[in-house]
Image (cartoon, rainbow, N blue to C red):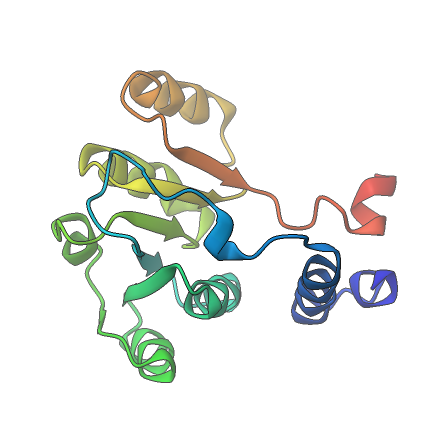
Length: 173
């Protein structure tokens, strides 16, 4: 497992992580309580914003989760959006507003270029979506502070992803 993480290949590292979790898990996904008051269905519907490298990894993880549905792929580069959407058999669009305005979508994963993160985060929160935001939030600390202050009272379901937290090279730093 550590060899895969140390190799720098994020897909190999994710596979190693999945294998380790599967081997060590004492319960199935079905054992997790799903009486969440913010949705009235059992499967969470997620839009993937960004169809680049990290978007492909997240889309695959969503598609493989039996309690999640990849509902939409969004990327302004239509070839990227269509390739990832078609791969998973889901609709795609170049316009993020399609995800924000769709009441059937519960959450978004923001894997767009860093300079777009804050705007996507604000739009997602304003649209009452749950959010997984890839790091970094932004490259300007002041913009991050302003954004978090603006959403902190209305965004109880915002997570910041840092998928290489346990990568040995990152742990050393």
